[in-house]
Image (cartoon, rainbow, N blue to C red):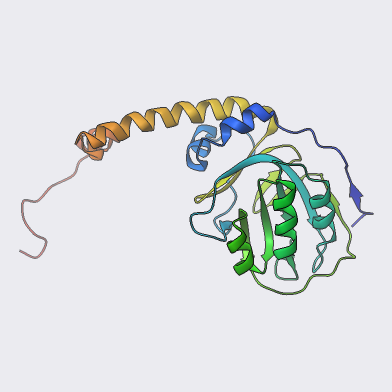
Amino acid sequence: MNASKVYLKVRRVDPTVVARAQAVTVADVHESMGVRGRPALMGARMHPIKEGQQKIAGPAVTAFCWPGDNLMMHRALYLAEPGDVLVVVCQAELSGAQWGDLATRYAQRKGLAGVVVQGCVRDVDQVRALGFPVWSTHIWPIHPDKRGEGFVNAPVVCEGVEVRPGDLIIADGDGVLCVPRDEARSIVDAAQTKMAKEDEAAEKVRAGIPVWELSGAAAIYAGMNVHEVDGAFDD
């Protein structure tokens, strides 16, 4: 690796877009993005460390850490601002914990929105009790050093998704996705429109209309060559 590099400034996604993104879900944003642009949805290994954890949305501050080391995570955490989502990548994921109790307490005090870690998180009982939102690919307590190379606030690939500093990170119980900063406004608009339609559909379900019909499955099924048998399989 070349010499470490730390960028002190981040061009963040518009705060008004972040505020609106806090009301949309990962699933709706993912569907609204479709297949355009670069991949957005992080792999299924990325999950919240606590069931029912608070949903988050905020601009990305990134850190890439040397195997077995979390020095650059600490530098990124120090530079992060209220409302940011810290995205930490250690490709040697089981080589050393990237996040723990003290980092959580400091992030909470600073007002960060949450943290996303490709790598290990430890002290999870304390972190869960503190209620700070954390997503990670692993839970393991192995000790990290603080002397390694790396970089801060440069693009990283986190669980299969390129994250650039200032991009919009949205995370909930379904997982984590990254919306490119320059596309965030239009994508959040589309997700809000989709959620409004979902709310209308939910009202119809409460009124007794079957999801079989609302989803369009009934119409598709009617056009298929399905032989229905008026009887049990083992008759």
